[in-house]
Length: 111
Image (cartoon, rainbow, N blue to C red; front, side, top):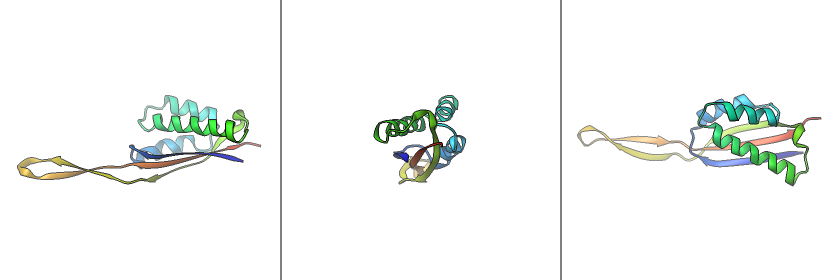
């Protein structure tokens, strides 16, 4: 049995999220919560919210034991890029690409 949570259109670049996801992969849910709470990265805040959502899904929808949950899968894919224009000297315009991410988190029970 597995519980899944997805966060789409997060306004954090996928590269930055991938660094944090590598820290919590295959860790217990409680340990992953602690890691996300005390890691000083901008991506940790939305990922903490996503992990809490996945834990709540496991507990309420699938009747899983919260103490035996672990992060079985976590991956990020790139969402649509917001294209913005930055004014530069002599009437030129530079493009700024604001990347978005889609994150999926899967929790399973340890035997």
